Length: 330
Image (spheres, rainbow, N blue to C red):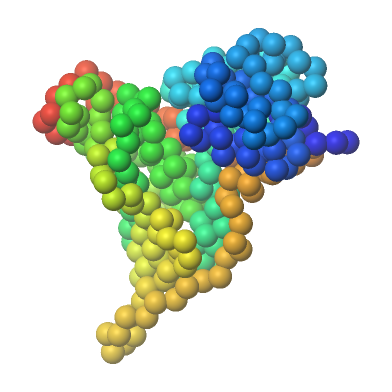
């Protein structure tokens, strides 16, 4: 059986990375976008790949067995639903949907039709993240005390209603994965609309992560910003023995373990992890799941956790956009 043929829907800044990876894997058949300049770029750079602005024609194409969706998040549900109803396997960028019921409906459609439904929670395929997960499981850090994820940049192309829908899916999915927690709870949320344009552009979440049988709860925090000129992508996991810092803006030694000797001297270790592009691994995983008939690592269950948390946050902040004062809810 040959590789599944993939059609990519949405060739924006992130979609171009998906085009590159699926083409490199030999699986890209078609790119669909409503921007002709983007389609011209694909036709020029990726010979043999078909281009179109007609989504219905992609759904009718018998050669295409899988749809990859990289469009604004408020379109994910409808596009993914149409693809599943057309009998196509689906990979949709995060978040899977903006509503919990929509996420459940997509999962039910994929299950009853025996189709792969995968969500682009990229960091679960990151070699450094998986190295850290193994270190946590082995007890290298000791008992976990606190976990924090900071994700900040300068972004004026604001397609989502809130910075949290844009950035926090990465943080929530990664933290839940590392802590083996499928039911994180939001204890507090704060958001600021600094420009007065109705969009929350700086926000934080305080979270609780029940682990194991629920007898231990690890506190955590997510901090996101669209107005920070210095890009920050950093995860900190504090343990009783060591503290791990994963700085994804660094080219090398992204993962560092910090500890103190009995004399108070700080020691820094750099664990080994494979040097591979996370997105390439993620795209490859999607194709392999189709070939083997397996549920992906980032399936609808994984996505449901993120959608549930962010839907809860949206309710807490609803009706508040347009204010420059901080919005906070417990």
